[in-house]
Length: 112
Length: 112
Image (cartoon, rainbow over all chains, first blue to last red; front, side, top):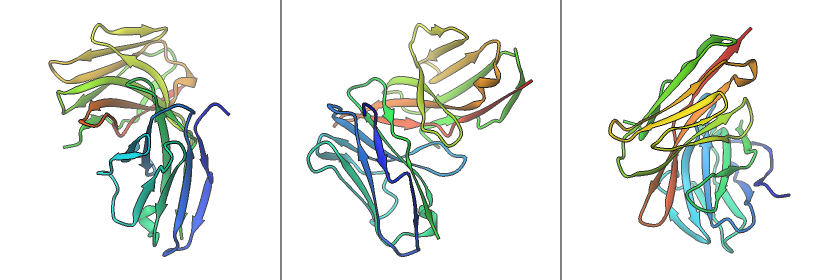
C-alpha cells in the first residue's frame, strides 16, 4: 500500500514480556517518528530517525525502550520487560520534509 | 511548561455554531505549524497548514501570530461530522532535522 503500515494492530502482553512493534513508512520518506498516545492525551514524542540514523531519542521514557531503523526504511520499536504504564497506542509517522507527516493506524498495546 | 499547549475542552456546540481553538507554543524558533484532526481510535490526519498570512479552507480558517506565539483554528457552520479531537502541531528545526511536537488536543463535540 501507499500509506504507513504498522503491525500488529493490537498486542496484549503479560507484564514483564518483551514486545516488538513494526513500522513500514511510505517509500522514500527519510524522516520517521515514533509517538506514544495514552487515552485522552495527544501523541507524545518518543524518537526520530533520519534515514537509518536515530537523531533524537529524548522522548523514550526509560532504557526499556529501544528503537532501530537499520536500513533506513522499516523501523522497530522494542519494549523490554513491559509494565502496565506502557499500555498505550504507539503511532509511527513518516515525512519527506517540513510538510505533512503521515501516520500509521497505530499499535494498541495492553499490558496485563 | 509543555512546548505546545491547548485547551483540552471539550467544546460542546450546536450544529451551525462557530467555534475557535487556540494553541500556544513556547519555542520562538518554531518552523512550521499545522492542525491535525484525530477521530476516536484513529490516527491523526492533517487538517490544514497554518501560515503567517492566515489561510482558509472552506469552513476552516487558521491563523498564526508569531509575536504572541499562538495559532488558532476557526470552524464556521459546525457540522456533526466535525466532532473530533483537534491537535496543534509545531515543527521545530533541530540541529539534525525537524521534530514534530503535538499539543494534547482539543475535543470538539457538535450536537444536533
